Image 1 (cartoon, rainbow, N blue to C red):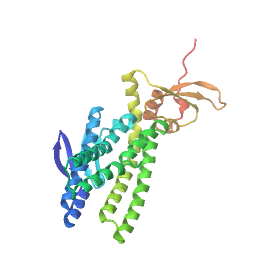
Image 2 (cartoon, rainbow, N blue to C red; image 1 turned 135 degrees about the vertical axis):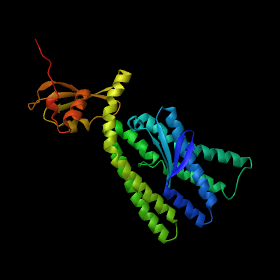
Image 3 (cartoon, rainbow, N blue to C red; image 1 turned 45 degrees about the vertical axis):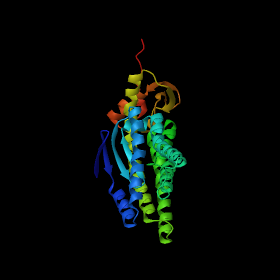
Image 4 (spheres, rainbow, N blue to C red; image 1 turned 90 degrees about the horizontal axis):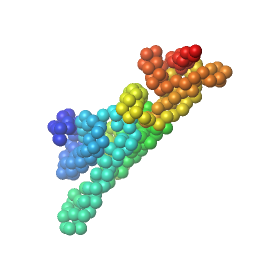
Amino acid sequence: MRAGRLWGIELHVNPLFLGLMGLYFVAGVLEKGLLIFGLVLFHELAHTVAAKYFGVRVIDVEILPFGGVARLGSEMSIEPSKEIAIALAGPLANLLLIAGAMGFRNYGFWSEELGPFFLQVNLMLAFFNLLPALPLDGGRILRSLLSPHVGVAQATITASVIGQVVAIMATGLGIVGVLNRVVGLDVVIVALFVLYAASKEKSMAPYLFVQQLTRKKEEITQTGVLPVEQLVATENVPLKEIVNLFVPQKFHLIMLLDQKLEYLGQVSEVQVLDALFTYGMDYPLGKVFKPKNTT
């Protein structure tokens, strides 16, 4: 649901978040719900400010039951250092609000009714979002730390699966808590939405993988230099086995061997990608290699 624009950024509110506000209204604590809305929005705007600073496109912001999502350009997911900095901006913004609130409290600007709740919500937004599980900020940090070693696709799948496991456990505990009147129904709603969002992130892994591959050629053209990663493979290996080993921000050279493990030559990442998009994932690496004519 579109809620307007702020600083040129489209703002959307998820219907489940509105449902959560409805629960606060029925419980007679709507002012707390509105406070949550403001803090979630502040958290997401911190992500967008960081994204703009690093030159990453900001598509829109959606307010969700567990926080929010700033939809950013896909280039962030394949540049680990930027993704870490942008992911940390949200929790750091909430911690700054906590520090500011404590300072105002020392000078007498404090509400005994809303003050503790303000601190509680900021702490929850900061530390819950730092859990190493997609779609949370901590999951994006985990993906960024893993992707240089296993590639962005596998890193996304790993962080998403952790997100699904965390969400399923939280849903189960939430249901038990509701039945025992320890927690409210909002906990179950948040957990179910995290499960949905984690599954959606997992389904996006193949697309991020393709974007990683295509962007690599742009990187080396723009910068003129990238660190190199050496691989060794036999000529009958399909291209999919090679590209699964490609990682961001490194250029790969493949030493090609025949069936007797004798050296045939070298194949570059660019050659592999061109063949991949022309012939498909099952094309053998040996057919990519074109030996230079000797005289």
